[in-house]
Image (cartoon, rainbow, N blue to C red; front, side, top):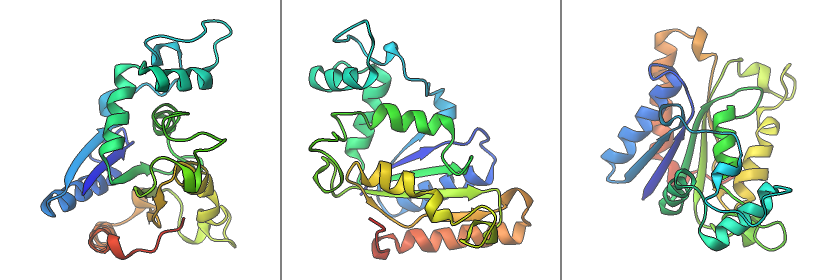
Length: 219
């Protein structure tokens, strides 16, 4: 199996990065091929701009979505975006590893999703979405470190149900592009948690990854 780990944490010694490292070690030990896009380390630019294209169909007024379709049809995405698209095409599993920021992904990861899962390439609202999207058969998994407690992210908690917060990502992005979305692996309050609990999280994650083929997909 080919794995692409999309990692978005600025600190290499963070617990979030430890989860990324564990996934890399697990899959490589299993004989899988693993690529990592460490977005902060790469200096990935999340801001959509004219520089995302080697050529454009129309300079003014500039329409980013129309230019994505033009670039897909004419192979004119920037080298940075093309490289990430190629990684995604090779991957059987896209693993998004990130801290929960404002109930979503960090800006640098959102930029990757905006640019790499481009209109024309991974979806089209008319005839390439959900069950008819071009990348059916790929899987996606979100591995998340949350700053709040698990109780805070329930339907009765102050932050609401975590699965409702992640609906836009699971359903509106990943499944929209045709991916089979696995249940997320989430750790809670890792910045305030003792070492024994963190070790328990790592062990739970190892077990999750060992049984990944048996997890029922959300979508």
